[in-house]
Length: 108
Image (cartoon, rainbow, N blue to C red; front, side, top):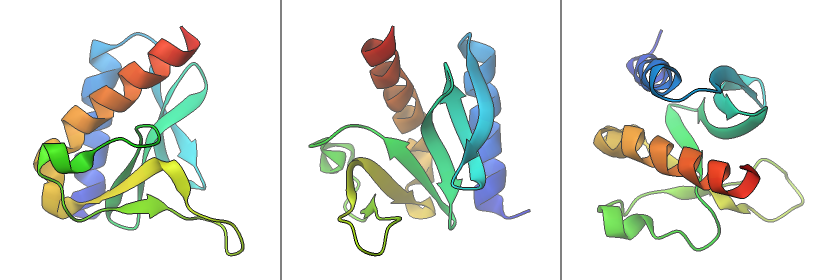
């Protein structure tokens, strides 16, 4: 297992212990984290991807290198989903918490 995926799984385990309703799941055949059957973060291509919402400012976290999730060839990127490279591993857990809290606020 890659160190990036191992870190993702470790973060997932922490969130599962801290928050009722958080479970491991899948997103696009990749390991993900779900709350009430909705994915808020997942691991793909040695990066962690977070649903943080349109217009979320990753630069305020000191993250200057990231991309928007773009899973479709003929559609624009998904503006609410951010791919954050392993270079910013120190912020992955905090971003996962933010993504979870955003989802909770949307669905209750």
